[in-house]
Image (cartoon, rainbow, N blue to C red; front, side, top):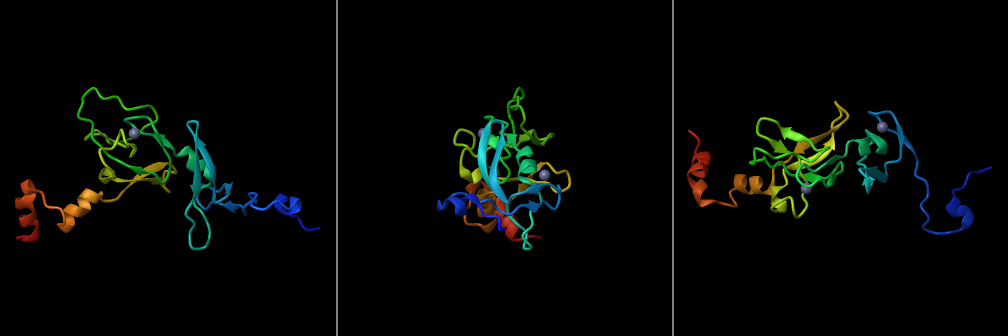
Length: 171
Ligand SMILES: [Zn+2]
Ligand SMILES: [Zn+2]
């Protein structure tokens, strides 16, 4: 007796066939490498990156548990989302519940790239990714497009000319 998927039995094409389950290498739970995750009543399709040997580090449930909210607007930030790290200039600023402070001293919070939150996509400062140590979400810093442009010299701000000259001719 050979087990067949329901799609084969009913002869219906394009029905979602069950994917092979994997055991996540870090959390140890059985999981599919992609599927729906749900957090704060929002659903999203997650397609986890697999290692060269086909394994994944976390199950979809654990990935869902690492979801946070934007400190500024409360939008849901799933694992894999780009984030901003704006600082709060308003001393009375109260971050939204379930959000994350990035740098307490500088009052920098993890925020979303939503149109009402980020001034521009160029403010992307990193991505919300799983931390294999704490098994929670964390910010993986990437240089924002602005930072990259500044360092390659393709964008030159007049007020920074002195600094750029200095940077190009170190003592
Ligand atoms: Zn898990
Ligand atoms: Zn936001």
